[in-house]
Length: 284
Ligand SMILES: Nc1ncnc2c1ncn2[C@@H]1O[C@H](COP(=O)(O)OP(=O)(O)OP(=O)(O)O)[C@@H](O)[C@H]1O
Ligand SMILES: [Mg+2]
Image 1 (cartoon, rainbow, N blue to C red):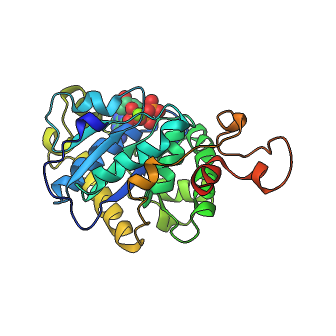
Image 2: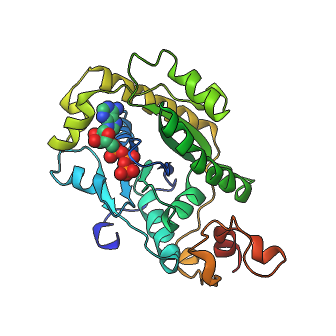
């Protein structure tokens, strides 16, 4: 990521907000939402960038034709050893942007923990079919962990029903009931629309490929919803570069197998049960 960030300008006094887009269920539309939401936020006047943490590089390839109104920075995070510099790099980028949108892969990786630690809003795209809804329960547990770790500045969660067709009469109610979440946390659904698929092929977003289509209108609504949530949540404090870079990791070897510390590791006591990110960020 470093070589792609060219800082010629003076940093802003205010740092940008972070929107992490994640779901451990694959193919729910994370990259489609990340790219189109970032572009809609840019169209709404916000300086926006995408951080692509997925080794599949969907967002990076989407941006390759350089037709998107936002920059995309590949930033996979393969190992916990790199978490400190990843956070520091993302913070540098935040001083240049109003909003940083992070596209996450559908596996539990250090990038997900790191993104959940710095996100103001966590956007979870979710299909309305039963397997998609069931598969989404897992990521909600990790969002819950992020809430526990960040009691003072908890991230806001926003669920986005995706690929919705007329056959689903009440997508917001369906998601709300199945996941046991208040309807207030659920954004206006994104329709199943060919423009979303074609926009990837053409390296565009739906606002430039199919202006005023239902796809474009719904993405704009989603952007307004996310902006509203960002206004309601107090920004989490920064790690402030140097401090993050100096993070020294002292993790049990089981941390990668059990990255969120759900299962008690050997031994007893608080240290054995703390999630990896608490061990990571608070043992300094
Ligand atoms: N609203 C939509 N309407 C039509 N097709 C869609 C929509 N959203 C996503 N798709 C299509 O669904 C497929 C998966 O979308 P996408 O790559 O965004 O999912 P993902 O969650 O990022 O997947 P992965 O878990 O592999 O990262 C793609 O072919 C994409 O074009
Ligand atoms: Mg993806």
